[in-house]
Length: 382
Ligand SMILES: [Zn+2]
Image (cartoon, rainbow, N blue to C red; front, side, top):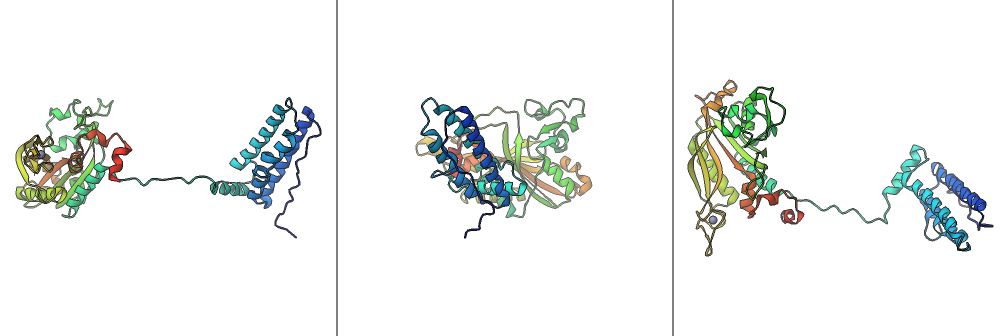
């Protein structure tokens, strides 16, 4: 004797005695009531798969097979549309219940959900494994070079105040970088004093000040992050790009430390046969300042690729990589109270474009390719 079921499912589909609308309505309503009773029996233990087979099964399910056979086949051409509609209404009614778990108490509804979750007849969901974005990969690789030299990673807000982005970095009040031509300011702040006005940081340098406010010397940090400038996008510019800055402050840090550190970093990142060259430059927050060039990694410094001119280095054999310099004593004045007495400590800082080093390292000649999100381009790094 079988006693798995606690409820007996009693409804059996019958042939229609006639095709009057009254008969059809009654038959449809009977089938619906029967389904309601069957459906409720999930609460008392009827296996849901058994109900599915009984009502929706392809072989002999009531709405998919039995009713079409018993009701529709012997209907006349004229009667067919109405019979078909009735069957379709019943089918939709049954399917809706299986899809929603409708009219059941919460416990039984869970059974329906679990049932939906394991429909093994559906194709699986394919989740392709993503890849690290080339700019982030280059940025991480460069930061790792400095981490191996004892540097820590520091980060800070992308929306900054004028104070951290300009004033504390020794930009004079009328410096052109403060102009809206170059900087993206947050709107509606004209009533605020200039130093409190918000903007999208134009460099990661504010994090240098923020870190020195928090940590006394000595410090060695690298700062990767997103920055914004009011530049229209082209092959080498973007209103949004990525920087990596570095700062080392201690007693007796010299320009020699700067040169040795950056020379080592370039060789680690681009390859040990890369040469470096420092040329005088100017930045508001460093004194003296320099630009670091590396020997062209494309042409090896010859300026030529076979007999063609080398474009990345403009045939000079050298590529500008970053700006750097000894931290201007005026910058230390802003954090003097936290141990940065310019008479006692010295330091160097540097900043480079993460997008630029990624372009050079991976041989990409258009910056915009990094930001278009075209999978055919990005999957090369997968
Ligand atoms: Zn070259």
